[in-house]
Image 1 (cartoon, one colour):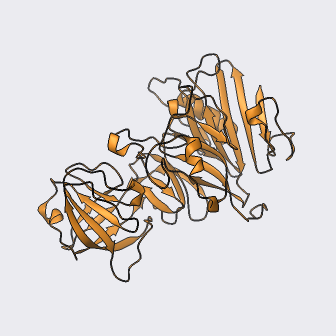
Image 2 (cartoon, one colour; image 1 turned 90 degrees about the vertical axis):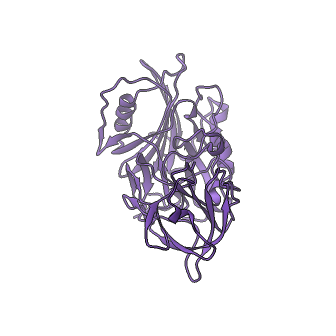
Length: 378
């Protein structure tokens, strides 16, 4: 059986409603559709949300685990934190993998760019992003973030993450109230006179001035400032900074994500140039989440699992094949297992494997822009 919602589904109209499941009974306008694809052998329940890429009023964004900062909450809770000025949320799936370290729970494993702001740095895994022209891409993204000290030397830095004694990490207000770090030297930074400043964006080099120096860690992060945390085993030339010193912070990535409004980590890549990827290692079926696209549509996909009477889940090869059969030319896996969740028009439509939504780090969201014509892009 396939439960279908939406104006894109074959044979349906914009005014069509679904009434066989009270939580899913909604009038859906043209431009997107939802269906629950149920198959008997193997037992699968797959949730597919399809979006017309030509629509000017629909776009993709991401959430954070807590309102405007890193943390953990359910997809449904994250949706509630989206600013009303961004528009109306239509659908969402859970996003990237994340750390479970107590002080940094919900730190995305890889890159996240939200409304143009760099929140989490790349870590080399497969990621998804929309370029400055609105075209989607997926590739392994590497971080080239680095700080230039007053003597001209450079050192790489992480962003809003756990800092050990041999690291440098930059913290913005996206981390929350403080750096949550321990030990080391921390520099509270303000913008140098006449220089651009926040939000952090890939492709920029910003000049910063040391406003104050703190030792011991857990320094408060100003809403309009940054804190550069330097591990205790870093060279003295890095740790010996004074108020008034000026440094440069370079935000570069490979590939170049300059101008990107939305990016989210995940992996592995499932489909490349229309071909499902292959794996030689042993594969286990689990609940899965994924996103993919072709020239005309985006696809958000969630596969229920670990529930033999409903759905056993998929292996990576099975999910890759399924995404290709949907018509995806490119597709990427997202976090799965107990995190796998799909939300559509105010309701969680899948059956989470733990019997309830598991809190996660972020989500990929389909939004409708406020006050934008529904006309198609040329």
